[in-house]
Image (cartoon, rainbow, N blue to C red; front, side):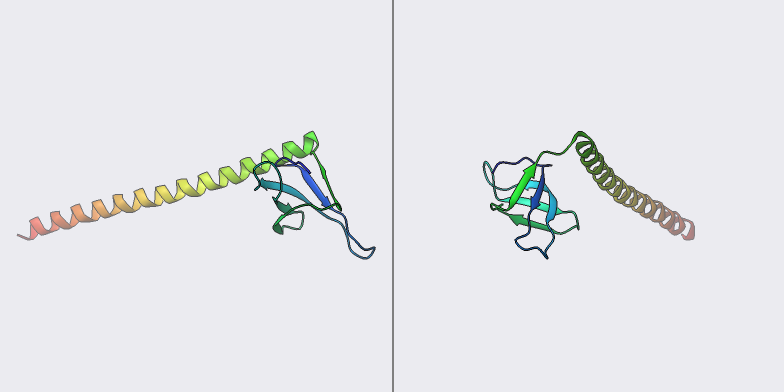
Length: 111
């Protein structure tokens, strides 16, 4: 069973009282197929090799757009966090440099 990242996978239940599980393939761990890393719609993530009770379908165009938007949002969040950390580091270094300079000036004036 072949799949691509972004494809939807449904694990059909083996009994009437259990619901089907549906998720998105977020990683392909084999060289040319299973096992797959799957993020289910409820947020759980697991590694699995689909059995005969699984179906895989390529996402629709609107689902692909949603996946791209989600990935872009995650990337933007990561970049914003990195920029904030860099700004805090630069601000901290600048504040330390100003404090050191002020301390040296204060020592000179005391002499």
